Image 1 (tube, rainbow, N blue to C red):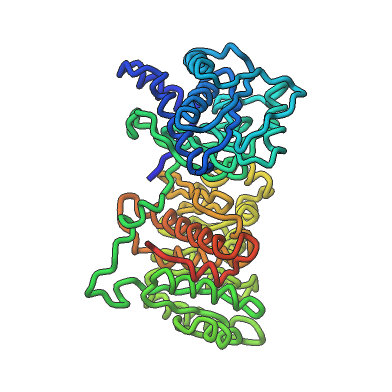
Image 2 (image 1 turned 120 degrees about the vertical axis):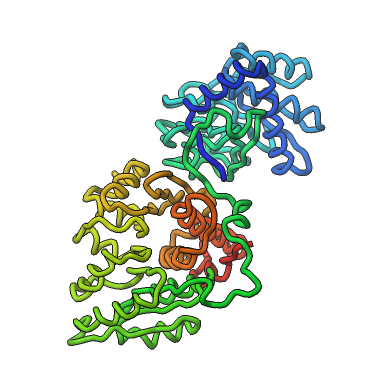
Length: 495
C-alpha cells in the first residue's frame, strides 16, 4: 500500500530524519539520482544523450547527480541550468558534474535546446507555488514542444505538490520518478495529466518514518493479500449473492454490463431485477446471471413491484442499483426502501439522481459512486466546483449521507469516513459510456470478499484498482480510443 505525502510534510520529515540519524542530505540526493538513472535506462535501453534541466535547489541537485551517474554508466549528458551557482548540496553535485566534463550552460531565454534523445526535468521540486517565468518558463515550453520523451524528477516542474494546481506553464512528463512517497499533487488536479507513469524511488528514509498519514493507494502487489485464492472446497454460495436493480427501455445495456462485470469479478450468484419489457434483452446479454421482472402497469413500475423487491432482498447479500434504471417517479417506492436496507447498497447513475432529490442518511455500509456531475447534483453545486476541490467534495458527500463514497474521475477518490484513498492505476480509455456500470458490478462482486484491515475502504480500493488494471490491459491490446466495454470486462482478472 502506497501512502501520499504533501510537500510540507516531506520537508519536515526529511529534516527530522537527517537531524535524528546524522545521515547527510547529499546521500539522500544520491539515492534519488540513482532512481532517475534507473528510469533513464528503461526509457533509453540502448543509451543516448540526455538533456538535464537543472534549477537552483534540491531538485536541480538531483539532476546534476543523475547527469553524473548517467555519464558514468556510459551515457551522454548535457545540462541547461538556471544559474551556475545553485544552493547547498546541489552546488556540490554541480561541481562533480563539471569535473567529469559534462557541459553545463546557463539557459538564455531565447536559446534553443541542444539535440538530445530525452529530457530530464529537474528545474523545480514540490515547493514551487508561483508560475514559472524567465528562463525557466522558456525551458518548460521548449521541452514540451521538443517531441522528446520527458522524465520528471520528483514532480513535473510547474506543478504544485499538494493539490496538483498548475498556476502557469508546467512540464508534461511521460514518466515521473518521485522520491520516498508519492506527492499528493501528482494524483490530484493537473497531476494525472502532467506526471505520466509514476514510480517511487526510496531514499534511505524508512517507509514509516514520522508516522505521516495521507491518501492511501492500493497497488497490484497488494492484490494477493486482499483477494486470496478460492478455497478448494468452495461453492457458489461462498462468494455471495448480488442483486442488481437496473435497466429500463433503451438502457438495457447498462444493466447487462453491470451484471456481466459482477459475474466476471467473482459474484457467486447474480440476479438482475429489471422492468418486464427489458428482461428478455438483459437475460440474452448476460446468460450467467438470473433475471427477475419488475411488474408493469400502464408503462410504469406497478405498485406490487415493491413486494418483488422485498422478496429479492431476502435472498441477497449486497445490492447494486441505478445502472440505466431511469428516472420515472414510479421507481421511488423501491429506491426509498433501499435507503434503509441493512445490507450493503451501491448507489450509482440514476439512483444518485434520486438521492439528490430525496436525500437521507444512509447506513454506513452503503456506497455512493458519483462522477463529478452526479456529485454536483448531490451537493447542489456546479461540476466545476467539484473538480476544483475533489477532496473537499468527497468529504462533504460522506458527511451528508453518512456512508462510503467513491468520487470517480481520472484518479478516483474514496473514503469510508475514517481514511481516504486514491486510485492511480487507470487509463483514459475509461472515458466512455459503460465504464461506470462495469465498475459498479465489480464493486458489488467484491463486497464481502475482500480481506484485510479497513475492509470498507479496501473494497472500494480493490474495485477501482481491478477496473483500472483491466483498462490498461485493454488499452495495450486495442489502443485508448478503441477499447469497448466488452474488452474491459474480458480483461478483469485478479492475478
